[in-house]
Length: 360
Image (tube, rainbow, N blue to C red; front, side, top):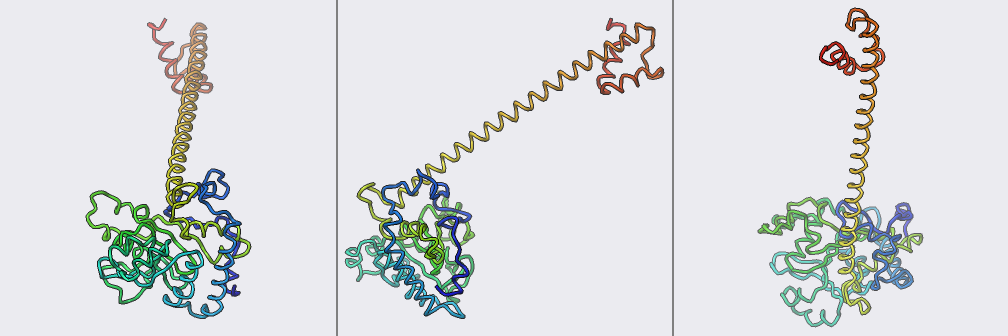
């Protein structure tokens, strides 16, 4: 790696980037979770992804050496010399520039897990049959471009919000493709056609999903994200399986052992984990509420007991003074004697009691 990139590298605490909205539950993804995603039979372990690590590391090293300089490489260079090569190294079969069904927009890369399906529809790019065969759509941006800012083509049609996140989500919606990848070569994000929609776009009364997508902040779209440049750092090699497992085509085909796709298992596992966490959190809140209520009750009982004891003692003192022919009033100092030892409420109650003939 170039020295400029080496400075950015560090040992990662997690193999993924926690965003404001996560597509998969962080606790379920955790490498320390023995019942999480790494326990799935469809998961490819670290030893199984070593070859992919070497290939991807070589691609990034060459790309940075040849193309990353004073100015970042443009979108077409990043896509052709980095993104497409990385996807091919992972096992994808890619096709460039397919027109979306609305005939107005074009997706950068169509990804096929099955080469046979790609060959069947390669001459029908943009048709419904073509998009039915596509496994995922990849939208590539120039090297290091922020996903949260408008730095795309200035001639982008005004009806399409040019922010990268909105682009990939609109493409998934328009083409009716389930999965999408958004990358600037360094950071790679995974989006789901339905699960990654912002809250207001999921509402059943929404008439135009595309409009809801374009008007939502990019941070509201749940995603799974990794920093690939950091992952190919040798010290982070142990985390590289998180990139391969979620971005390679093997995640999008049925695994013989589990008879399901890794991405589907991960979504279901995350949902179960989230519900379990909610139940545990709810239980903790109920337990805390019970403890707080018990403490309040104990404090009230203690105050009542203290008041009762003080009241009885003050009454006894007042009666003793009265029996000794001392008038209990504010002028002979007896009130002051009582108030020095007891609260004003107790003293008031006692004085009313002992000076009331009917209290005898």
